[in-house]
Amino acid sequence: MRPLTIAALALSTLLATGAHAQDTAPAASPAATAAPAAATPAKGDTARGRELTYTCKGCHGVTGYKNAYPNYHVPRIAGQHEQYLINALTGYREGTRRHPTMQAQAQSFSAQDIADIAAYLATLK
Image 1 (tube, rainbow, N blue to C red):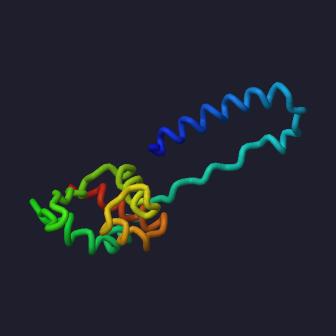
Image 2: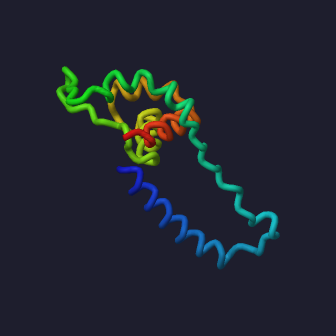
Image 3: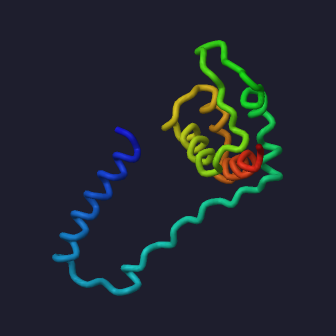
C-alpha cells in the first residue's frame, strides 16, 4: 500500500474514532489537550550542501549519462524543487524509495544533511 493511501486511511480512522471518543470521553484539562509542538523541518545550509554533494555529481552531473545495469537514465537533480529532493532522499534513507545505489548513499545522511543537500541543489540551474 502506498504511504499516502496508508496516511489517508489512518486519518479517516482517527477522525472517525476521535469523533466517537469526543462524545463519550470525559472533559480533559486544557494542559492535557494541548497538542505537542510540531517538529520544525531543518533549514538547509547551502554552503554545507555544496560540500556534501561531491559524490552526487559523479552520476547526476554528467549530461546524458546512462547506467550500465540496469539500463536507465540518471536524472539531473540540479535546480530540482527543494521539497522534492528532501522527500526523495528521505525515502531512499528509510527504504520506502528503492534504488540500491541511492539507498546506500542516503543511509549515512542525517535529516540536516538532507536539508543541506536539497537547499544547495535547488539553487543550481
